Image (spheres, rainbow, N blue to C red):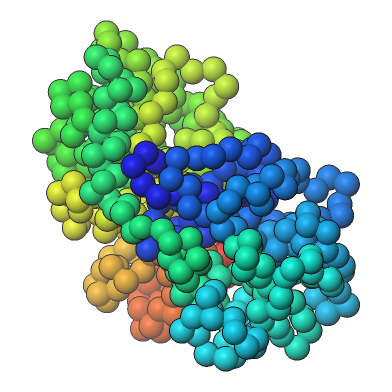
Length: 509
């Protein structure tokens, strides 16, 4: 981004690459991710480069391509995990598979004089490892900075060339002092300036939007959630009356959501479209999650295209797409694996009549919340828990029907009510109900039942990329279970999902 110091991240396929960017941005330093296939080039005000982790071995025939010219750019370089191994391989060192694969926590011991990268850290500190290969022989001119019981070269450096490598992952929360390590690299090694903030982002995005749209009009897909609300706010800042918001009732909404959104966003130029029959007909008989998302993405776009005809100059469709949506949907940054197609990214049709404008595409959820506050949105709006664009379609597993969706709506409303009543809503990233296509035998009023299962999901997260299970108080879970079974006909069993992300995702589909 023009006008700011830049730390560039080259992505080699790690699912945590975006976390590196987030940790660096938290320090007020702008960074961006580029594919590892990019040829070396001098970016304005580039002060450092990070080589991400990745799933490959440097000796694989299909290993991601890398131009070693990046190591000759004259700025500091930090290789993380695979990035460290790649640096070793590119500079004449040796990387080998190791008999003791390290995955999980490990204790790292600093070498004498390893002060620059590990300034302020104790002599021994816990980190998160995830590797099978490791450095067997470093390149000429490198010295050891840290080691573990099974990894002699857990960190190294050629300080004259300002090249650093660490075998562990400082970007994940499991590495206790990981943020301090990245801060030491960004400020202590790269000498970066902390000059990037949400305030500066607004000014730059407003300028970019005006240049991009010109005299045209923009249609905004407004759901009432955090992402679309902030998107609408920043577009309104840039375009004023040339912004037209559309809320689509796709038949996959939570209980009472259409009415609450219409009331809450009355101050916007908001049009409410009832397209529920269109979506449900298109989804009839579909059970595959990827097909669901793609069908929903296609239907959304067609509805917006049809509505755009009411606005003669509308050539643009604005969406609240975020970085995690993009990373999980497509391998646009390098060899990252596709996790799932988000309806507004991987689910979009190949041919569209509207051009996309996505001002939040490079932001994480916590950054979007901060941006919303900068734009003057209410805490109620900004702090709302995330709700997936495909709505209840990805929480109603199996075949969709109006009857099953109604069962899920009522169960989900009970989860929301009990979470709020317990004062837990603001401290939880997401809490919701899932309807499973699994039937089990039960007994109600001395009669046999054979009904479906409801799963409750509640997680803590900061960016949606990793998540830990929320340990809900037992009385809260008991009340949820009792109310759902007694008040929602069609469910006779309630279970609690205790999976973390990874290996699971937050949503079930």
